Amino acid sequence: MKTRKVPLRKDIVTGEMFAKKDLVRVVKNKEGEVFLDPSGKQNGRGAYISLNREAAKEAKEKRVFEKAFSMPIDPAFYEELFAYVDHQQARKELFENEK
Image (cartoon, rainbow, N blue to C red; front, side, top):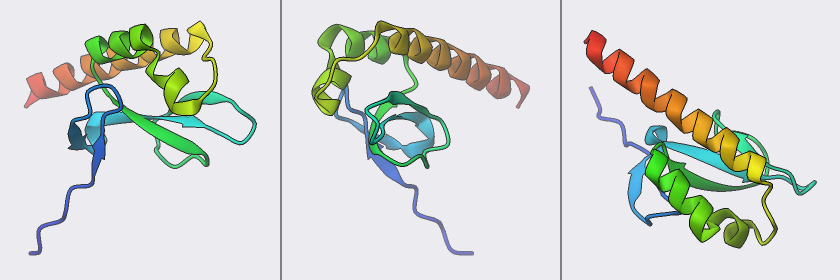
């Protein structure tokens, strides 16, 4: 059987390449809305961030998404990002323990 190529994307905070499934996509659409895109298929300009609480904190401190999308970002977006990252880390730990 042929081995499949793993799609890689660059983390906007650290600049490291990760497998696409280990990142979450953040999208800015034509209306200027910035939101999380867990499916990775929404229309708009995308940037990826790793599913890591420290990376999310660093993104907020360095205002990474403001620079990437050239617009101010609502602080509520970062709260949503923190909640999503925490949830995904908990899921990962739960499913790793079952194996």
